[in-house]
Length: 160
Length: 160
Image (cartoon, rainbow over all chains, first blue to last red):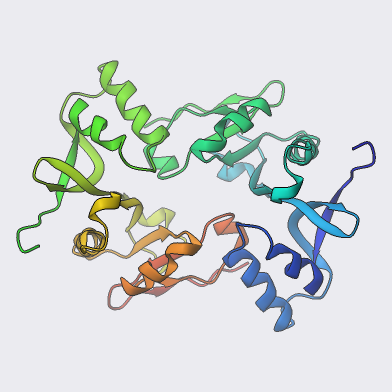
């Protein structure tokens, strides 16, 4: 694992083909493909995805998006934060630490991180140092938000 | 099915016990239980859940929450709308139309409805008259939003 690096994935046909192997392939990827086909985005333009290659095969990925502080309903003081989703490691490459490498990469931006955890994967996020927020129906609806708090940042208390 | 009625579910120990049979039992339900135990909410207070009973057994449910128009990023003209989540029918009661009865109930409010569809259930939502929105990473992140548009309402075009 010493040489495992995380790369920002570019929007191109090869990457979009590799995405099809991931369980959470969905409208986000389809939309990228359509934009590429329609020349709305250029080949090799940046994507919100980061991934790990094993040889030339993409074996793990996640999406990261930086939210402006004015949309922050999660952290105190309110600030820019990262939303993390579609963290996924291909079945034959699981339990090798690739998930942790991606999460550690996200933490290095130094911003708080918010993700929407499945109930089943809450244990993984806790091992990664994430904690569940106090559920607030108005903010969270069907989400199970979990957050990673850098030093000096705490949970935002809702007013509702 | 002629007599099937949809009821707004109240927060009480019986309902919260029945919720445990549903696959998507999660922090929302746990939070309701804790609030009840701590007397933060009263027994039989209103919940965002609606359900269908077969005899005295809860066999289908969904959550509905009305969003204020100032948060509307989905509809044109911007307006109050319903967010629908945790639509679920217990395994032995599926394919009997209970899902449709719940969705029809939600439509009767006359407001646009937004849900976050799983890729696998997109076909169900299309049968219910929902349509996928144009994916917008900044708004949608990991969601696959699908909406139901009442007469005179259309999709909000993003500026990004």
